[in-house]
Image (cartoon, rainbow, N blue to C red; front, side, top):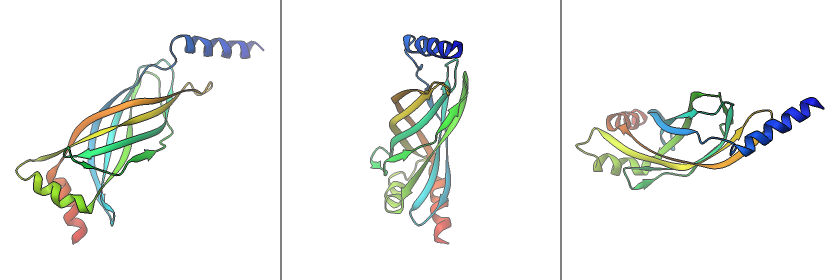
Length: 161
């Protein structure tokens, strides 16, 4: 009974404090992963800072990636179910595929540039405190970055060999 009261008190304290402090999401890195029949795969690595004094879990990530301000890739809907330790930063991997049909125009339009810009926009759902399972949905994600143009060309050329 005492444990139940402690748990209830902790839950009320979290609710009164507004539950979960918004995690800070920044772009950590992007790397070309591989080429396949679907296109060129890349990993978008997001750095998520959990400033809370308790663990949080990223349950779902729904995102849209736009390459070179005009090529919208297929929507991303992944369930990393990854726990982020309290007061630490954690890297969350978001896999993306650039379809073959958009690679030639992207390469042509970025001629003379060393990088290709992209933007990741979406939402993430999180759970706060493992024991209590308090949930908060729809944290916004809106980050911009770039991938090296030559890396994309090399990955595409590797598939053609």
